[in-house]
Amino acid sequence: MAQTLQTDVAIVGAGPVGLFAVFELGMLKLSSVLIDALADVGGQCAALYPEKPIYDIPAHPAIDAADLVARLEQQIAPFPTPRLLGCVVTGLAGEKGAFVLTTDRGDTVEAKAVILAAGAGAFGPNRPPLEGLPAYETTGAVQYYVKQREALRGKRVVIAGGGDSAVDWALALKDIAQVAVVHRRPKFRAAPETAAQLDAAAAKGEVEMVIPYQLHALHGEAGVLTGVEVATLKGETKLLPADVLLPFFGLSMDLGPIAGWGLDSDAHHVKVEPSTCETSTPGVFAIGDVATYPGKLKLILQGFSEAAMAAHAAHAVVHPNTALHFEYSTSKGVPG
Image (cartoon, rainbow, N blue to C red; front, side):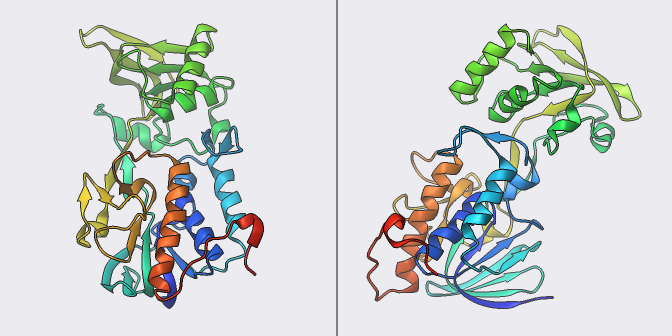
């Protein structure tokens, strides 16, 4: 049933950064509403890789994505926040201090400020151009996200890619599966520490490194995978026994309706002022992966920092005639 809500700040996107924005706004005694196209909160973390370990969250040497979302839910529990889930924001009208957002379900949200925490926007995997791929996707022999690590126990797993996801999952699966990593060159784009851990695992024979190769063909029948054929740029091929292929070639990003809001953008990202995270539209802020500025790092921890900056900047929009006197949470506690 469509709803009409009034709030101080509308947050578009309920991933980790959007959830933390609820906390930062709540600490400033600002109300908020969460809106997300997915049926549950957590964004990519919950939908794509709930069991993937994350290593760059302060005070957590490693934490699974689902656990991170659960802890953020616990953190924002003191701040009752309406949620419009499973719907897309299709329209933004009005101006600073008086915005109206509408969804494809007919919901209306009146807000004085807006925070975009839309992550990668409408996202989907970059699929390798392999013949017969859909049949293997249907059976789960080709997966772009690992939702249950334990389901791969004892499997022959081929991981393709050179970024953080490929390296992290190779390390996470090496103790329960037979893992081969395919990459077109020796250097990986992953964090140096985890790349070094992968090298060490390969040296111990815990992971097979298939370099420099690229995916070439899938072998099997009726969606049951038996092998992954890889090839060098010179045309040399080899066949890797495999039950599951995990191609990690990143996500294709589409801002969706946000692209039509008139915000200054650059390559599917929204440009913001680094000190406030405000977009080219006064009163509209962008944080997390959707935001871009010189020196931007696509890290969850930087998104958390941006959430704090945007919340403080939004306070001036919601209460334009009230000075905000910053207080540390250790001294003021969590507002009741």
